Image (cartoon, rainbow, N blue to C red):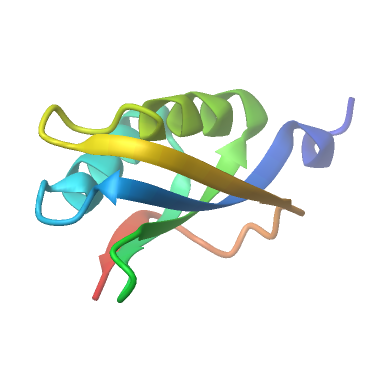
Length: 96
């Protein structure tokens, strides 16, 4: 299998009690621990939006974490749009 096939990208929208509970901070720490890159931001509709790229296995582990989140979060739903890996991020950042 070529390296491109092992890399993936997920565009994630998490709903529930996910703002004001340090979801973005813990998503950044989780991403760093798993070696995936991308960003997280709060949406005006109360969701957290995350773009994540990396080794498919680690992206899946990150998404598994998103279903739980930090201890103070109540995750109700996780929507994922799978996209082609682009390799455009060098780290995982918190956006606005």
